[in-house]
Length: 134
Image (cartoon, rainbow, N blue to C red):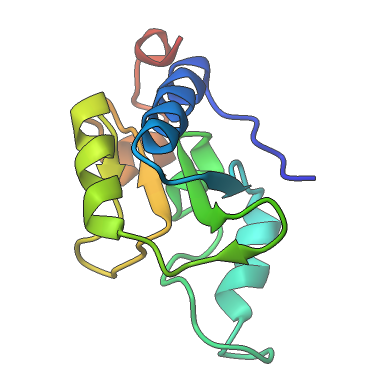
C-alpha cells in the first residue's frame, strides 16, 4: 500500500489531476507519495550501491517527496501498471491544476509536485508557510 501522506492541498490537487486524466482517457495509479529520508536514501542507492537503474538524483532530505508535496504515477489498465503514457498531455493537465511536472532538469516523467513558490532549500530549512498547503 502506498503511503500518500500528502499535505491536504497537494492531495486535493492530486485528486483533481487524477480525475481530469481519467476524463481524458488516461487511467492512473499513484505509485508514490510521501517518502521518509530512509526510503529516499534506499531509492538513491539503486544503481549506485544496490542493483537496478538510477531513478533519482535526490538523497534523503533532498526530495520533495520527503516534504509531503510530491507524488508519482503510472498508467493502470485495471491489472497492469505501465509507463507508456502521453506524458506531455499529463504535464499539461498538471500545469492547468497548478502542479509542476518532472519533465525538466533530471527528467522524472512520473513525478508531479506542488511547491507554492518555495524552493527545496525553503522546505529543508522549514521556511515555508504551512497554511499554503492546507
